[in-house]
Image 1 (spheres, helix red, strand yellow):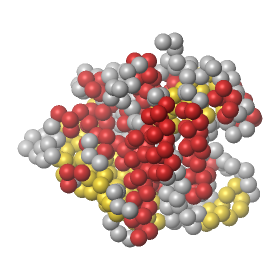
Image 2: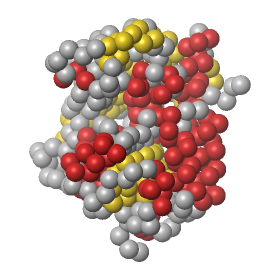
Image 3: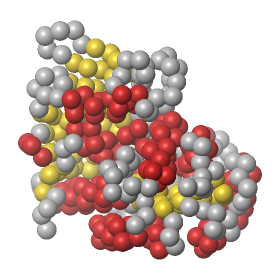
Image 4: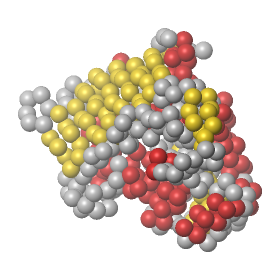
Length: 385
């Protein structure tokens, strides 16, 4: 098979991250599409790409493109992913896969019928020590899993003047903090433990029901760097800024998740602690190259990310010696290597080493249950009507 070529749709914060990850994974990028010709041209020049696309149709019609990466606002994911598959190209979509389970279920069906490869970028799975934690569970070293607890906290929406399209339900969905970052945590812990969320009880809160929107958008995560005065207008916000969720997992395990985008000082902090009958593991994205392993009758361990010390499962996703730290950008590279390696291997009946559309659909089902639980102030089972 000839070398696969990608195109990236979306030139905001995460699109260029995809481009960098693809280049580091050895995948050529044909070009990028932004929200306007100006943004497309600027991104193509900054990223040294050969082409700035003028339209999504132009991306789909490009015979050099084998895979399309979708890194656009949430509301566009469903239609774009569907069109990519209908055009006969593989697709890797940012989360959430769609705006609701009706859309995501359809995408799962379209992907199956197409015979193409379709993935969702839950990149946090690809931190090597998260892979090591999964292997610890698989080996039975953790024992029976009792509890799965943790948090995902940021501060980029702390102030009333902080604004981004994600705060608007019509652009990002009725859930925001949970759907934007909480789903990364939920996907990660279910992937590590092999357990699925079966019921939820959620309590969510909107701190700023009115935010001040700049007249002229600011770039995601960079708006708080703006020091000049900009004209603003008030905008109503119904999506949550933070919240807590009680969880019931298959096999009877229990858990809790705290999600916040208004916690001062937490720039991008995902943490989990998984406790079993034999030991426990804990990890934080702020210290991603160390995994805590807890014991009852012997000293605890602090395992560093070192290919000489971890299992083979994790070693395959480490490219530098111990002490040479790998972090957030490396997770994209490793996710893309797994995705493109699967396509090149050509056996689409094999187990997928990356998050699939089925995983994306399951996460949206969890989100819908969380939103319903919050609105109705009760436990909600995922299979309930």
